[in-house]
Image (tube, rainbow, N blue to C red; front, side):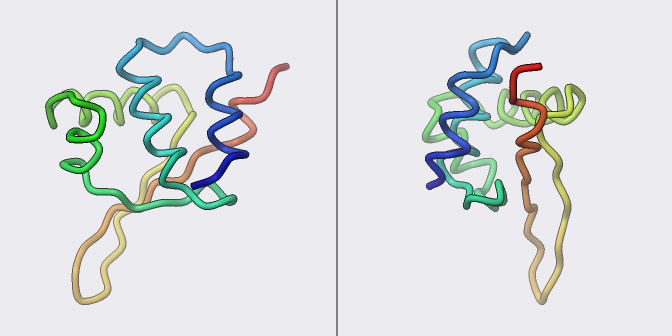
Length: 92
């Protein structure tokens, strides 16, 4: 868990819906201080108490808005790595 990332998400003044902010908070809760993590969409959905479809939609919006970047990595198995773009959360 990264307190730095979670604080930035809590303090960010954004145009996010409650579901999008909750998913971003879950990502921040799972992230290291560099903003990287790799929780499954099922795990995010379970902990946020939303459907997997909602998580998928929120992740797409978060990337569209520039708060998040995802990358698929394969090393014998496939995993999606999420990176919070910390600078986008800071006040201007």
